[in-house]
Image: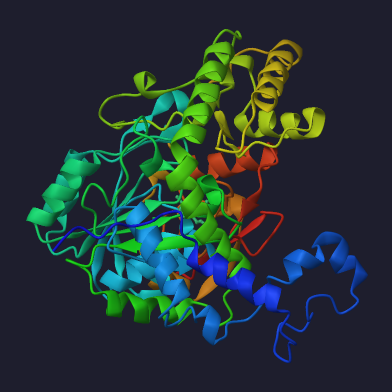
Length: 487
Ligand SMILES: Cc1ncc(COP(=O)(O)O)c(C=O)c1O
């Protein structure tokens, strides 16, 4: 049989949606805005042409919970673009994709190996399904105050500690662009009969340029969650779950996806996935080439500014960095005496520049297929100005953040246990009943069931002083934390 030729110029879902709009069908179904409904304020925000595309599912447009026609065709094309066998469109972000991925392979009492610098969605999946985490603590880069990628050694150690683990989850790449030792980890875990799940929330663009780290499905992972809305260019909240059907049952995953998938999935989001896949396959290489070049030039210029340091592959210890996504422009700002949170706020409030995130040591600018030289130049100029205006003695920060956590209860046991409200300053040595994190990155500083150490307390206090956007706690002022009741 000859090879099936896949035509990525096709946009089956978008085409059908367009046909539907052009037909001007009289709608006696929801959504109730009926493409305008006289809500003039809504029309100021969302033009009529967009409201016309905000329709509910019907036979010609297929149905997200059981796709058989145009959604299925669009999903097949997306799977091909990411070297996967199947894909599921997701309309509740990569949170939903990560949770469906985890719940597809582990359930009550099963063990899953995770790097501790996971996004909260992964730990929340364990609260939902009752599986237990066995954490890996990958290399910690002291000078940037961040945990980086996972090595084969990390995975080997974790598997020797928990040989009955059902799955291992890897982040590819991290928020700051650091890739793990993916290929060797996948081969080793598979030899041991363990599934490999990959959180590619920050890697939707990887398959489309050969100077970026390789994508998980091309390397043989079992499943991957890709945030097309983050670096791919589709609409916010649109994401995808990818799978290798030789090792994972598509029908099983479909049942799990349908536990949380809306029955009214937005066609705007889904059509944006269809159009974005075409765009990335056809034009991605050229656009990413430009983005990589912009990031390279910006790095060079930033590294000429005294006190600032824009890191890349060569600047990380080889035991935790096995590839690097140069479009993630991470800059260490402690050399000018500022925390990342501080610099992030200054850029927003005084220079009208919104970064992706700021943490204790660094700031992160995401350079994507949508960026222009002019904008990147403005960022570099603003950084020059900040380095002159704000320069103080370099900061010495000594936090290992989430790399120093100790788990006392599983996330689910902790989540459902009896808790009491404790003053934050009295909480050292208690077990947290809540998450504590800043978003982004959404990596828990504490997850339910973890010991509150002095170091973690000091880190939370620093974040409070710096006015970091702390979330997860019931007390929005972060004076109290719910801890597990002691017997
Ligand atoms: C590593 C990682 N995984 C998953 C997610 C969840 O993605 P979403 O915001 O699309 O739900 C994020 C979000 O920041 C993330 O950083």
